[in-house]
Amino acid sequence: MPHAQTTSHGADSMAPLAGAQPGFFRRNAPKFVASAVMTACMLWALKKQDMSLVPPASAFAKVPHWWTVPVYVLFLAVMSLFRASRWRFLLRSSAEIPYRRIITVSWISFAAILVLPFRLGEFIRPMMIRDKGKISATAALGTVVAERIIDGLVLSAILGLSLFLIPTISPLPEHVVGLPSVPTSLVRRSAMGMFALFTGAFGTIAVFYFARNFARRATLAVFGIVSQKLAQKLADTASKLADGLHFLGRVRDAGPFLLETGLYWLVNACGMWVLAWGCGIVHEGGGAITLGECFALMGMLGAAILIPGPPGMLGVFQVGIFCGMTLYFPEDIVKSNGAVFTFLLYVIQFAWTILAALGGLFDREAMASLKRSEDSVPATVEAA
Image (cartoon, rainbow, N blue to C red; front, side, top):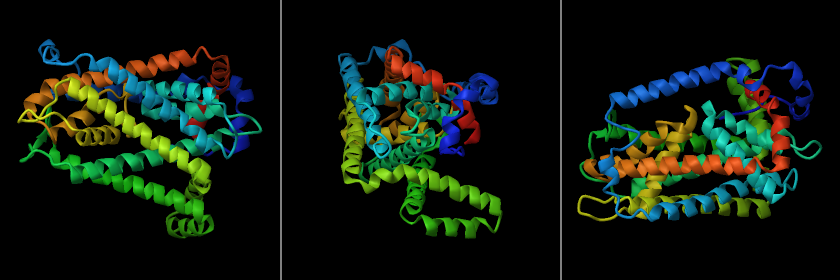
C-alpha cells in the first residue's frame, strides 16, 4: 500500500524546486522499464496458456443482446460518479472541496492509475487536490490510502461471502479455464488471503487512529527487536496513514461515505450482471447468470487488479474474470460467451476511463493543479 514519508510542509514546497529536479519519466525510468518487461512477460504467459485477449469472431456471433452494451455504459457512468464523489467526505475534515473539482481530479487520477505502471497514478490525486493552507498532499494521500483499504475490505468481504453462499459447479475443474497452470484451489485460498490481508491492514490503521500511543509503543517494542530505526519508521508511517480515518469520527461524513461506497459497488455489480446476461453467459442447464455470481466475479476482479501490475491492467484483468467464471460456468461458455464478456468489459471500462479524463482536461483549474503537481509526484513516489 502506498505511503508518504514527506511532511506536509515538504510536500507542498516541492514545486518551487521542480526546475532543479529531473522530469517524471526520467526519475521513474526503472519503473517504466520494469513495467515493459512485466507486460511482455504477461503477454508471453497468456500466449503459452490457452487464453486470448481478443475472442474469435465466432464468439461475438453468439452474443444475443447487443443492446446491453450501451445500457452497461450508463451503469458505468453512474458508478464512476459514486466512485469519484465519495472522496469529498474523506477530505472534509481538512477542507470543503467543490464537487466539480472532486470529480475532475478523480477522473484524471483514475486514468493515470490505469495507464501508469505499479499504480503510480495513485499519487496524482492527492497532488492535484492539495491546496496550500487548507489541505496538504500528505493529508490527501492519507485519505486515498484509507479509501483503498476500505475498498479492499469491502471487496474481499464480498468475495468471501460469495464463495461461501453462492454454489459453484460440482465438481470444480482442477484448473482455471484458459490457465492450465493455475489450480482452482489457489483461487479460493487467494480470496481468503485477500480478506485476511485487508482486515489486518484496516485493523492496524484503526488501532493507530483510536489508540495511537498504545500502537506506537507496541510497534517500537516488537519491531525494535530487529531495528529501532525500522520500528520508528513503521510507527511514523502508520500514524500518518491513520489520519485518513478522521472521517470515522464524524457521523455526517462516515455515513454518506459508506453509503456511496456501497452504491458504487452495487451499481458496478448490477452493470456487470446486465452485460453478462446480454453476452449470453448461462449455466449448463441454460439458467442465466445471477446477481450473486456477478458479485463473485466483481470480487475476483478486484482481488486481481488491486495488486500493482502492468499498465492498463493488461492480463491481470482478464485473469481475474476467468478465475471467477471458472467456478460457476462450463468451460465452453467461459471460452466463448465469457471471453466476449471479458473483452467488452475491459474495452468499455478502459475507453470510459480515458474519455472521462480527457473531458476533465478541459477544466482550467484541474489543468493548473496538474501542472503544479507534475514535478512533485515523482518526489512523493520516491519517498514512498
